[in-house]
Length: 387
Image 1 (cartoon, rainbow, N blue to C red):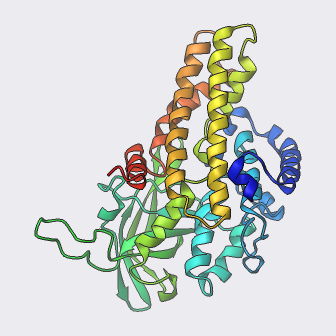
Image 2 (image 1 turned 120 degrees about the horizontal axis):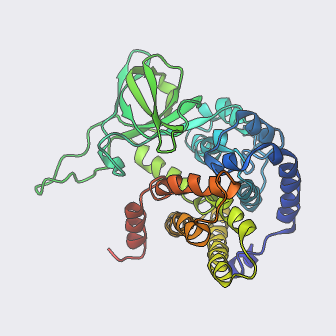
């Protein structure tokens, strides 16, 4: 582990052994998946593929065995993830559950919810969505208005959640709601604690009163949803952790959400297509693509550093925000580079053409999901004592 501090690119032998195993698996599975589907990267979902990964022990890799996990290292999990992402594998069905929902349940409901549900996540049979964002709240989670109130048999939830990726295929949602009032406003009119009175609940997506409505993106695809809660009753034991602990839990979740290699490997298919189409004798191609590859190398080193922090039990929130912010800048520039280098020369319908079209329309979302650029830079500034 000390070697990681000196050279984040140096990985233990077991990691490279696993890399070979994952590549062999992908060589068998990926030829059946066309390049356009690979462009979806970690947002592409295939429940059957998720079950295959569960059978191989590649979901819940670092979790305790008593929860169906495999007690492997954070760095081994990182290697598996970067290979899946680089190949454009359809890992989206289980992604949220593996990345943050399972760890959250093990931490805050270790003896109640986790033993019942987390083993199903590890086997690739239980999928989750995130109930944080709301209409009119933007990235300001402290302004949410959805509520849960005590009722006969548990808690009754009312409100709406927006941009809930994968809610139409998820079995469960972890939803952030208000269970108490925010602390009273100070003399200046602002609440002294905008983050008070929030709690999180586990919600079965088949619960009566819960409605999922599709939101089509500009690609015409259905990934986002609006979820409405109309007197949705959840049992008492579905309160995650303690009442009022929601903001603390969300902070832990967002650290997981921003710390993975998906934050700079969302456009890998377009880069691969550009490399395949490049002219080795064209200096413009060599300079532009060489610069991108160097940027990817730097982001990988930074991302591996975050993985090392997680392995040591450190809080990666600041470092993860830096990786996500810089990763989005690099990836959002790729379509412009592709059009600059190959525009007017691309055969319509070719794999390069498909990747360029898809990524051009998808790229604006890269600086929104997981926290907007403004939110991330606020975290960075605060972490560096610049504000």
